[in-house]
Length: 76
Image 1 (cartoon, rainbow, N blue to C red):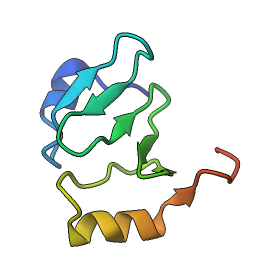
Image 2: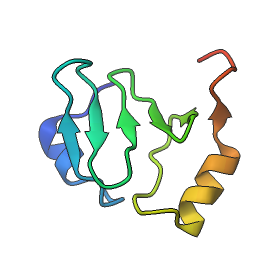
Image 3: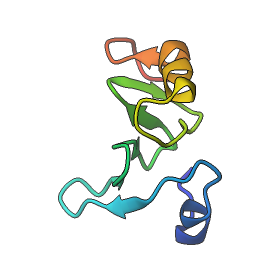
């Protein structure tokens, strides 16, 4: 389920989401995390229902990436 603008702006991970006018996706201008309208988050070729931490190649991001689903698996 999509979040409201206020919920997205107050996310606990520190993302600064901007709406991409072409794709209608919210993309973090700091780390590139993409929030889709179905509630999935994409970062560095992997997706998950949990929001990844924001930053530039942090240990927390690597942990999220290692536990997320690869691009080539079927989406839930």
